[in-house]
Length: 337
Image 1 (tube, rainbow, N blue to C red):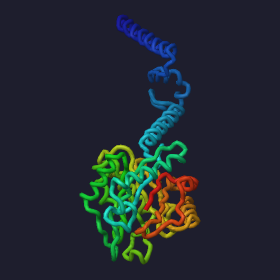
Image 2 (cartoon, rainbow, N blue to C red):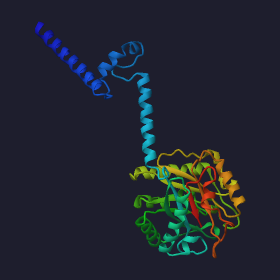
Image 3 (cartoon, helix red, strand yellow):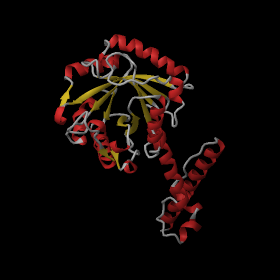
Image 4 (cartoon, rainbow, N blue to C red):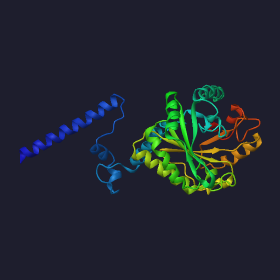
C-alpha cells in the first residue's frame, strides 16, 4: 500500500512539473497557448464551484470568446470566397443569336472582348482601386408567345462559356421564366455551376408571364428565398467551391411582391438586385433609388442600354462610368445591352 501511494505521489509530482514547465515555456516564448483543461479548471475553480459546469468545460466567458472567434473566422472565410470583395463586374448582355436582344448578338466573341476590355478600363480608371472583371450575360431561356420558353443550344452556350473561361471572364445565365415556375427554371441552369467555375445565374421577373410585351410579370420575395435555398443546396451537395451570384432584375415595384421578405444572408449564394430598364438619366436614377430602398438586398447592379441600331431600347444620353459609380449604394455589377 505504501509503495502504491508513493508511486502515485511521484506521478502526480511529475505531472505538476510538466504542467508548470509548459506554462513557463509558453510565457517565456511569448506564445499564447491553451492550457490543459485540468489547469484551466483549477485556475477557475471558484467560478465553476457553483455553476454546474462539467470539469474540463469552458467557462461562460471563454465560450463566448470562442464563439466570437469562430464567427469571425467564418466571416473571413466567406469574404475570401466572395468575388465582389475586391472586384466589380462589367458585363455585355444579350443572346448570341439575336441582334435585337443586346450587344452580345451584334458582334463576334473576339470583337466583344476587345470592346469590353476598353469599357472595363474606363471603369477601372474611376473605380478607386477596385479591380474590374469582364463577363458575358447570356439569355439562357427566352420568353415566347403564351409564356413558352426557347432555350439556347447547349453547344452554342458552351462555346461562349469556354471562350470566357479562356479569357478570365465570368458568364451569367439569365432565365426569363415565362409561364413556368421560377424555381424549376433556375434548376435547369444549376448543372452549369458544377461543370463551369465561372458561371453564375439570373432570373428576370419581367418575363414571368403568359403575355410577354403586354404585361410585366413578377416573382415573390418568398420565391426568391426558395430559389436561393435550392441553389445553395445544389452548391453544397455537389461540393462546389466558393460562392455563386444570383441576380434578380427589377425596374418597377410590381416585379417583386413582398420584397421586404427577401433574405440575402445565404452563405454560398450572393444575391444581387439589378436595376433594369432604359430611359433618360433622371428616369434611371429614379428607378435605382427605388431599388436602393431594399436595404435587405445590399448588393446592387445597374443596367445600361447602348444607343445603337438594332437595340430594342436605348439610354439617351447614356451615363458615364463615373456617373454610374456616383449612384448610392454604388453598384458592383454593371451590364450593357
